[in-house]
Image 1: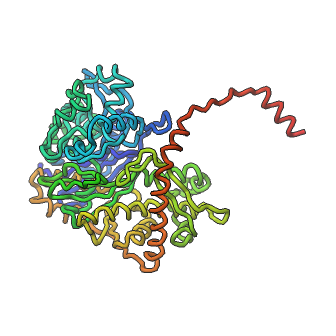
Image 2: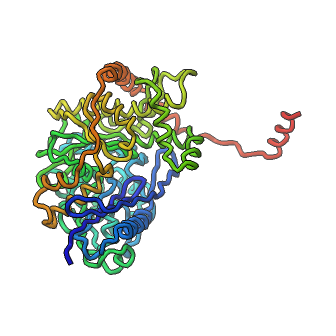
Image 3: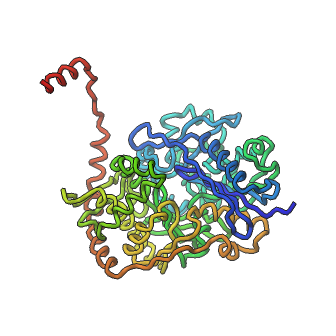
Length: 535
């Protein structure tokens, strides 16, 4: 049987997606399903590894059913995923429970301790990463200090797509792109850095780190047990895979720094590929290993982007949710329509989008979201648009930093769920002054996964050829001169606000941590009070 199809799986922060492609780049079927994130305490965000797997099984079965493709004709499987999250497995290969994901901030104190013990510049030179609670090393230190018994029970630690690969193949492995997001991996030698691991006080847990392979190498084959669950054919090759952001870079057709992509999902990442590990002396952006030979990935990003709009939708727009449900539309479509009637700058409203701390290029875990300039004149639509504008202002900040390193793109490829909003796409074009490209496939990580299989299997001769097949432009948006001028003035104020308030974020975050004792409910007293008020 001729093998001419490729299966891609992407474990995002909120949704697992799967797609089936023909080797010519044609998308045959796409399936997605959400899974839960748990927030047991302020600043904490946890997920259950078995939710990743169970959801992956459902979307893979869904894609195979939709496409009606014989599983025996699938060339290979490639998985990508969110990064920095490490699931712990015991001796029998079972998950030891929920784990903190990348946005979890509980390990901020451990990050501060690291900065006191080791020169952060030395860590950056080795790993390409700024010392921050985002990265896996700080989370491991948190477990060492708070749940050492769990680490003692753990046999191996796997990131989300690695857990999917393990459940598909029985092999515990990772790849260089996600390994280089742990703050334990040397991006120059492309090996685990034993010296750094010891210096961080994690030497006794070094065995938790699995073998790391290049993204394009085969990790294993689908087992009979996994085949019965997923519908795949036993023996189908499974690649080592890559992180979601590096998969998106590939899926955006980016093979060098002449183009830049911005992907908005829960957070936002602006990224490109380099031909050398170019580091920033000021440590404002991160650099990791790239998904294809001879490349490194430059990334800068926000913790919260789409998450801010989701927060707004769920907490301040309940009526819109009901309308969307009754009309079978997305709530964001209605909110976008409202925002279209608000002028650029939202009539003097500016939002700082640091609802879960500030990442690159500011790196302040204590940063908080701010709605500045609010008056009784402003409406729900003003706030919603100002939130989109706030993310775009921070994107402009990131691009200004990249220009210092001669990375000066003339266009910006938008990816992820945020690219579904034409309003937001125009805002980003006008704030940055760049042409914005919207691809046919917004779920670019899936396209990047497919490209890896296509080239690794020999079905496509080069990554350049694969980019032409799997990346297709749908819409191009040009900046509007009048709006660009308005936004430039607002951006100047935005940047000054961010700098001034930076000195106060830590103070307010410490105040928020002070325990507040809620008095117990006295039902009898409350009923008496209500009766008294009604009389």
